[in-house]
Length: 174
Image (spheres, one colour):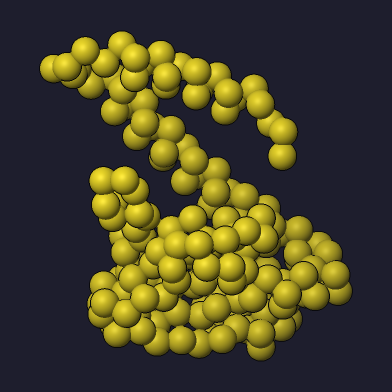
């Protein structure tokens, strides 16, 4: 990946060319065939994945089976939650089409951020924006889901939702 291409991605927007070139040196290129697993829910790899071309499916296992959470395309990123929190992946990623990605390992970022704190801060801020947008979309989706009329008595679900929402907005014990 070229530095000029890297800075078109939201996570690296605003970086100057020398910083982008330094990051490009640490990127690992990978290719996946349709149906091939990129990440598995619960894996403990801390890396930010940048989609160069193709499409992948984000899914998560639940009691009802596999749930598709999103379809990601070129220019999108994934793995950002594990990258930031140093925690196992919360979802699985499967290539839906031939998929080309770059992988930016957390250790590479930490080394870069120690050497170039301003640029590291910019990347962290951009990742926070990606996460905030995903949280906003999730909040909208959940609110829409609970505002739709139901045919069954769902008063318990609405109470549970109110308790959850209250906890999310008041309990910030990280």
